[in-house]
Length: 166
Ligand code: ZN
Image 1 (cartoon, protein in one colour):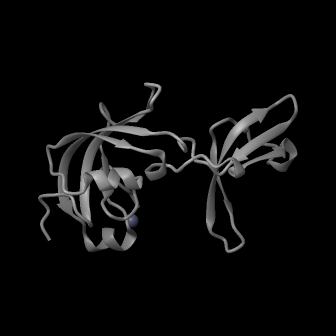
Image 2: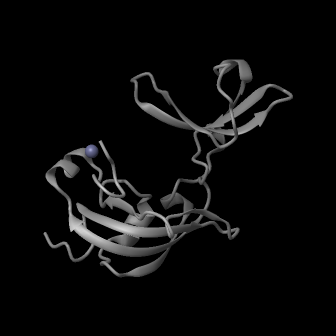
């Protein structure tokens, strides 16, 4: 395989900035460590991976990703309000916190705290990602590309700088 353009199993190192439609910056790596990811393994939202396909080191691009190809449309059925007593008493529950529960097969299900009603002692949790329903506006600068190692392919993620350390 060629490593000159981004394809499945490329290890891509890039800088990114994620801006929401209201102009707020949700996340950015510029000025910090770049992100390294393994292309074609679902490590980025689908709409961004698709737009990075075929790009090369040195490319800069703006990628606009609709919610459906980002963190999904907002599903109101994913919201659930529970009494505070359903949560561990020694954990401070804050809006925006993420945690995992398990389905009946033991698979992890990500959940987030949507709202905390301290007066009514109720917590609203949601299966919607905090950026669900949002259009994602990425500014991308691709720094480098290389082929993944066998070990990285078997793990499905990048090792070393910008990736996993284990
Ligand atoms: Zn690994």
